[in-house]
Amino acid sequence: MSTHQHLNPNLIAPCGMNCGLCLGYLREKNHCIGCRVDGPEKASHCASCKIKNCEKLAKTQSGFCYECADYPCARIKHMDKRYQTQYGMSMIENQETIRNVGLAQFVAQEEIRWTCPECGARICVHRPNCQQCGTPRLDLKNKK
Image (cartoon, rainbow, N blue to C red; front, top):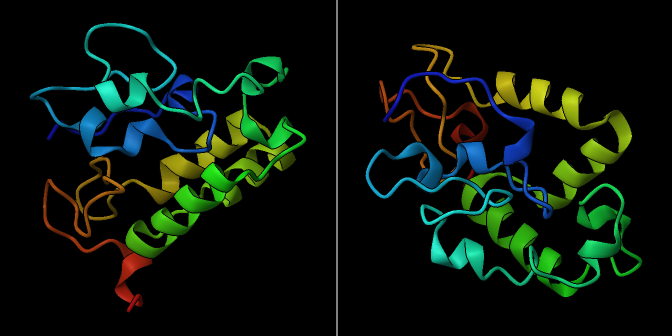
């Protein structure tokens, strides 16, 4: 796992997922480049994502699902429930924050939330502990 890197606003997916926190992005082997970037390094499930490739998304000015008349659609609701249950992250909450405070402020908040307080490494949303030093994620300590 690599050491701390600043989060890039271009790594915030249309659904509200912060690709900079994804295991696929953080790992060195078979590194994914994120949802909004095209290239051979992009994971196949990201390239074929029905949310990212939604025709209604292409009509939004911001490039985020929250602008869609169908928001939150069944896909977003399903993904949100899965991520809340398994990883302590809400795609809907992320999108509402982006809508209310803007992308730059959202990314600044994410920098704080997803930086390990012990070693300063980026915390992966898909893991319960910091991959660098093993410190448990604070948002998961009281879960279950």
